[in-house]
Length: 169
Image 1 (tube, rainbow, N blue to C red):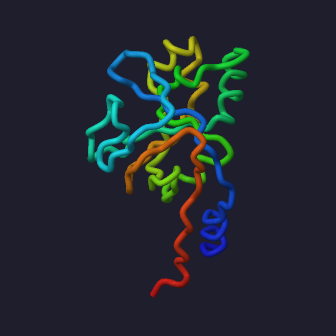
Image 2: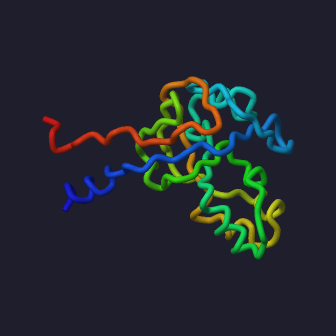
Image 3: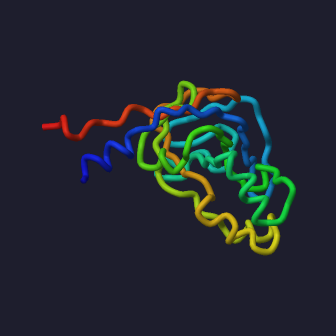
């Protein structure tokens, strides 16, 4: 059973795309959309307020674009600006849940899924009553940087090949 589950979890042939890059210049400032960003190992995105925290599992945060419609629906809104969610990267076409605990690439950069990005109480203020609960379970993914570089809008998001544990000694 373990081998079959590992195989299922390791099968991720889909590729996604990076649709938006957002930086938080400082606390309580609006997110700023950019077309490219420098990713620094152990730090984060150059120009983001969380840059420079090498021990953090939350060096960069991602949100799945497909969940914008779900979240808007739960909040009875026609649409939702991704900047309100205060996540760094908006990706489409690949499951963020499937990237948790594994390495993946965005363009030339290698990242590692470090766990869910849980909502904070600020979501209640930004999204309105029920915002916190609406984001639970779809808040995104926190990642660590393995190899830095520059990311750009339109970069492909793809999982690194899974290690075949049955072939290990």
